[in-house]
Amino acid sequence: MSTKTLEFHFDFGSPAVYLAYTQVRRIAQETGAALVWHPILLGGVFKASGNTNPVGVPAKSRWIFEDMARWARYWGVPFVLNPHFPINTLALMRGACGMLMRQPEDFERYVDTVFHAMWVEPRNLNDPTETMAVLTQAGFDADAFMAMVADPDVKADLIARSDASVARGAFGAPTLFVGEQMFFGQDRMHFVKDALLA
Image (cartoon, rainbow, N blue to C red; front, side):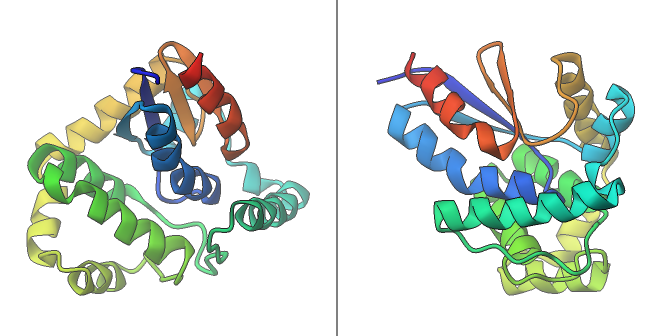
């Protein structure tokens, strides 16, 4: 079995990231790899790498969402196109960094809660009131969350993590690293598994 590390660079706002998220824990478990979660701000990565959002091209946008549905069926996972897409994930991604820094025992439950609200229910997470309702329903302290995402150290951590991803070659998400090998996209998970087993 592998003793390698699988780094998952993610932003909640991408359906492709959601689909990869549904597979990373399984792949880590099947290969014996250590899974490392790496929150990033996709908009910041786009800007720093010179990339643009692919859904800005109407024909590509239609194809992407049809293809996401195909992948969801292939893996047998729930997926509902969020009618409020695109969603500003700045506070949500700061929340992921804050959870890793301050409440690591709650991190994966937070990630599961947000991905489910974004791509399964789906909820309007552009609305802070709706986001707080989602978190409260999941047992999180919404007021503490708001204070955490306003913390300068948490804000700086998200910037640093996004910059570090770009420095390693990332230009979007999902981006996954096995050692120095970089993989991009939910449709590369079989290559990720092969790299972990090599």
